Image (tube, rainbow, N blue to C red; front, side, top):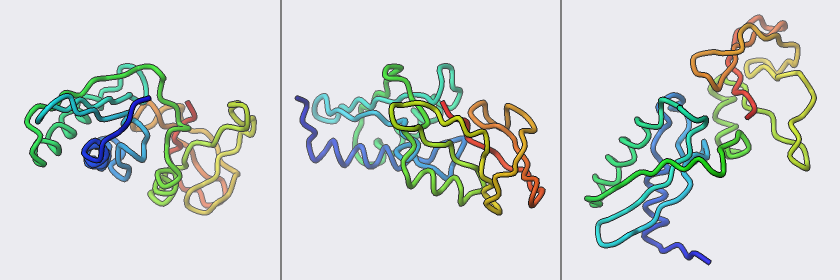
Length: 164
């Protein structure tokens, strides 16, 4: 059993507070990509980070931002390690992260049903008016993890964070 020290918890809070470079409305903790922080020795810390998908270009910016915030808090030797297993999924987005996405105008991913199945409902709720009468405009939006949709009720376009 691995025990987390108070210092590791504080460093995880700091690293987790870094905004996502592609979705700055979310922190890395809310997005669920921060997997762990381990103190390796005096002034030496390793941070584990899982990208939203393999080859995600934002992982470098996330790593740099984590290193910077921990350097600013007195940790001289910070290494950020990319961890691919277990793979990130949209289930890793916190409830607060989902709320913030919707508030920001991005339809959050649908939650998985019991047993891990992706819901079969094809409707995506409009973050502007709440209607489920929406249509897919493009499978990709500003980032590969989002699709572009439009609401038939209010006619507003919006991003939908795809379920992964």
